[in-house]
Amino acid sequence: MDHRQSGEFHRHQRRRSSLKLPVLDPDGTALSSPLLQVLHTLFTEFDKDQDDALRHEELDHYVFSTNGQHPSDEFLSAMGQRFGANDKGWLTKEGFLAFYLEQTLGDQDETRKDMAAHGYDRWTLRKL
Image 1 (cartoon, rainbow, N blue to C red):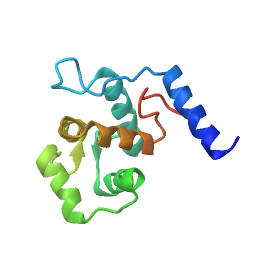
Image 2: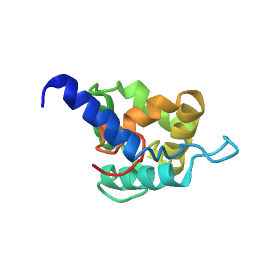
Image 3: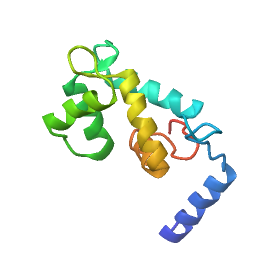
Image 4: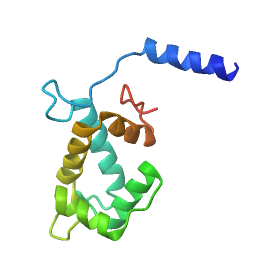
């Protein structure tokens, strides 16, 4: 199958499974249930010590896995301060979800791209 045929095949496959799950709820004000499931799974995978917070090393690993860049210490601290931190300043699960709500309200494609970076189909939100 040449490159052109491969592209056509993938477009056809996406149409056949054209279930494009929403990333926001019907009101457009909260994260959708399918996206919440994926985010809970991702948070649990990166929360290696299972303390319901991403310490800076865990958050750094998540960000690097998502976009290929290591964030600064200032960025890591600011994430917790802005979206929700525990008493150690680490991003909580609620803060992680708050970040994704803000991002998704502003740019749904960016959230879908993040999910794809972690091995999920950006349209169906299923693990590939």
